[in-house]
Length: 211
Image (cartoon, rainbow, N blue to C red; front, side, top):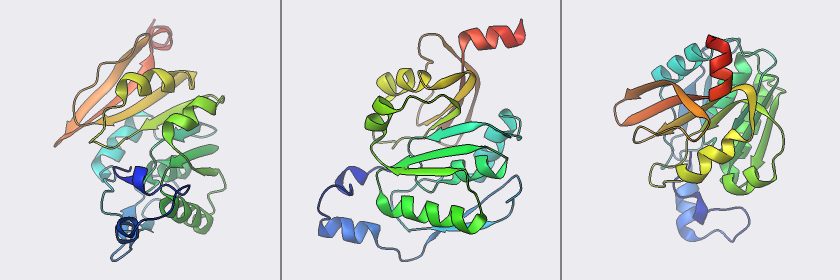
């Protein structure tokens, strides 16, 4: 996820601060924790603001989702390292759409997917809000992990729900507990340190599943 990429967008000239910011000294190492690529270690540029979803949180999240995502379609609007998209593909997702404003991170994710043979990745260099405005496909899981120094939830959750399939989920990671938007319920919530993570469902789909 990115806290400063608004200043490092591919559509504008790169400033000296962005050059320093995107410089890769010691790359981040992220381990895929489940599925057919379990145990594979991936490297991403050492962008200082990255806050990858911790292993134990990813493990809990995919336990909530049932581990097997065969045939599912996912969308990660603040993909950063791309770990959530790679975990989804490792578990059989048919399509994982990853969006990030940092071109270096998107290129690294595409390269990693190619090495793994993860053909279902679709990666975009784009602003999340702009991407949401033009996207029309439905997704079974929408991952939302925006920068912690922003507060986009009042518009982000309702718009993300418009792209959620009838029995889909929204995963949201934030520095505080979030209230679900209208017509949604918090199906799961947990906290790891300062990170609150949630799994939201459509109210009607949850009622049908438990009725």
